[in-house]
Image 1 (spheres, rainbow, N blue to C red):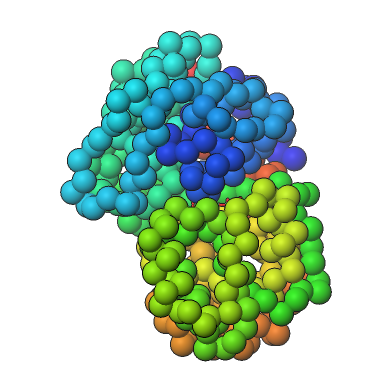
Image 2: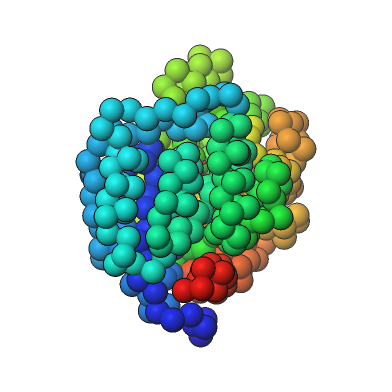
Length: 363
Ligand code: UDP
């Protein structure tokens, strides 16, 4: 465990307004926030989480905020305007934060939304922003860039590739991610099937994995929330004979058990995936990862040690990589997750980041 250089902090973590924690609609942010909260608590800091009503979070103080959910940024175009629904849960969360801010040392924002960045100069407490996606809209780039300039050290990202999508790349702290590895069991004897895990939405590129298994006639099990129903229906219509099975959205406990039985995880994103939590979850179970050489997964997968990287958008590349799977030692995969992505490893990075914020705010 890291020896803290920091004073013990009282921290308010504000979750994504696109879905309740536990719903899956918030994507990787839900688990990321949970893991960061656990990691900070293990280091002796005190943590309260603010999240949309309906959120579930075991053993971590939680303030549930009512209101209407935000639309996800990745479903809009580059020139998308900033929009908020009536009675916005995002607005309500930050109104709450404004009122209670003096009880906390630092606020940590997990929302990829304009409002918390815009409000940053008007808060009296420092706000640390964990940016969960790469560049998507001009309005977001602009406001995050302004905060990066005005409040040095307050912007963190999950990978260098994600930072590289922004003009303020050099001002980003690379936090990567971390997981409670005791929740993931190593499995050395998989079944024959492959796995695909994630939100079922066009940026995740599920169709490429389906096309690959159709060619190979190897079963593919799919886990995750169906975020875009028509996208999913199109895949089923376009690949009627593919050996695929949709297995629903599972809790971490059930997901890791099912995932561990897979020969490999296929990651086929069409966007620059900021990190790709599911890559680490697979490695933690001893499951090799086959991913496009793009975004976060390209920084996670170690070629021929923990999986294979494939030319982006190449189904033929996926097919070839699947044929080389027996060269990967599953024990190496688990070891790699333990080395870099444990809660302890992330805790060290978190404290460096928070320390810089506290120092630069003369806390
Ligand atoms: N997930 C889950 N149950 C499932 C499928 C996925 O809890 O059945 C979670 C998974 O643990 C991961 C998240 O969904 O934390 C997906 O996050 P990722 O970073 O891979 O992608 P994102 O959705 O953020 O683009």
